[in-house]
Image 1 (cartoon, rainbow, N blue to C red):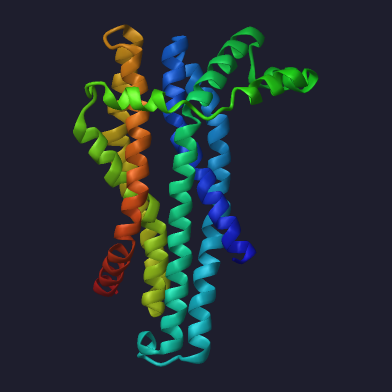
Image 2: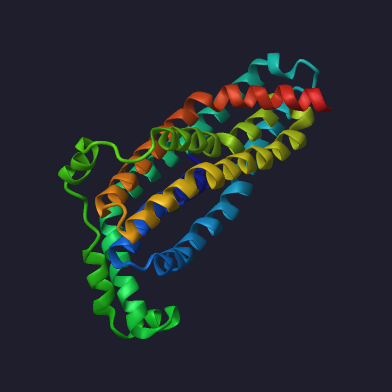
Length: 287
């Protein structure tokens, strides 16, 4: 594994880990009755995912470009896809991309396992923010009192299997369509950029156009998440804050959203190639 690929794998896992932990933040907000504060604190962590995404995208693009250029170097004919050497390049590229998708699954699993610990850490963080009044003061207090950092670190533990099992055994109190949408949206979002980049390798002549479609695909997934998943999750959370629902409903929602997110990353493996060929077809259609 090259350094670039290892970096992409690591950053992808971090991105999906952090995006899974948002479910814990909602639960911490309900538990403390301070949802807005919890979400504000999470934005600090989300900056890490945003930065990782900015680094990951060009690294992944360079991996794809290297595979394309290696093929073009030895075979520049029109029937490039029929060339055995380029086919081997494509096969190697596919394995690398599937490894990246697997990293998204691993990151989601780790994030799901860390949900209970994250809830505890955010509850303490929210109370600490109320006490000191600002995030910079929290960092200053942690710097001057290293024991508080060690105290937070001790909260990071693997959850007892019974916690998740109990949530799965309870009657489902959240919409099934909302969970199904989370699977589909996660699958599209996970493989959108990767399928578009691979489509560029399948159709090197128009690889820039194929790469451009990644923004459209991920934009559609983001819009769907913002209109289907996030409002429902917010409504359930607000109902728990008002006492219309119990806290266990939000805990169940966090477990099921993490689970459906995990299934979505597995779905990404299945739709990766078909999505790439769809991008190839669309690009040929519009160019």
